[in-house]
Image 1 (cartoon, rainbow, N blue to C red):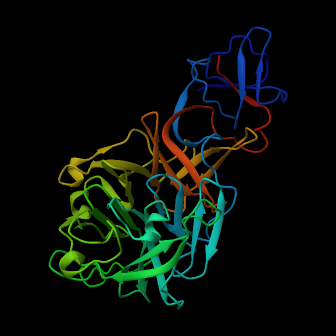
Image 2: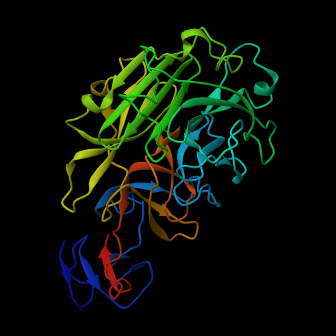
Image 3: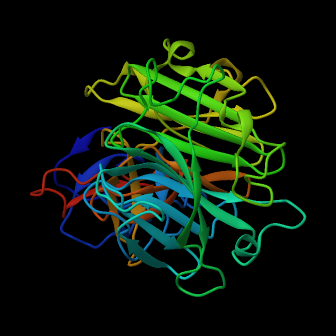
Length: 402
């Protein structure tokens, strides 16, 4: 797009840039031309149909934007309840502490140790909420809207377990907070090999570890990866067990995965590294950095949608349109529309988690690096406007949008 110096607005084409004295975010000239300040944004593609609208990952002011931080310097291991009411995540890498966010009340509670853990050598890797559909769950589960919480926890980067905890019930500030240990079990592959052992060695809390629970079919999906070296999906068929139905126990071979999929090998032509896994009632949503490198040296963060009804292979999925990124920025970033109408760009601490679907559009949650607070966002949102240029220009450069 051409940039011209000086002069009025006459003769300017739509999407052309010119410099003017500062006239605010949006203004209309005497000839009816509409100008948008560089660095400002608008989503109104109806009023301005001819203006270029680039696809961005966007958290609008009407989306959930937590007021308080829910993590330390590097929060991670995010888990979200299937009704979108609660979220969990660890405080920072190599730490037994966690934050619980009550999304309905927009309140955050910090706890130093996961229930049943009493040492700083225990590290939370990932978290999740487990919805129980059994006819008569235990009372502590019923009191918490038929949920309990689970966490993937290793001891000093070894000895990986799935810990279960009952929750504070009711509708108060602490509703959904893990509060009492209900036991643990060791997840294994289909042959009985611990996920802590070779060839997996999934015990490092600085690496992705995610869980998704299918309450209808009573299947637990655990995903782990380690940089761009390995990535596996483990599926546990728990329909014959108490865990996730009416209680917390797994016995016999329930701790052995029924399905193990090497996503790293299957995705090697398209995925450089796989960053997160989450899901809804019909699909898994898997974020990954592309093999292809952009012109600025960065890699795009895409989201792949894999049906639960299929064989769960990488090839069975399709990518959502767009990426977790903002035009003009590199890495995993989102454009945040603040409550006062201004815009800012936030990078994300980790791969996004599925949150809910609104008008057929999947929405995701992630922690912004600048705020360490949760942000709801969608990808591939048409957005008019671009980043501010050099600070010496950003008050006077405008784009014609109509």
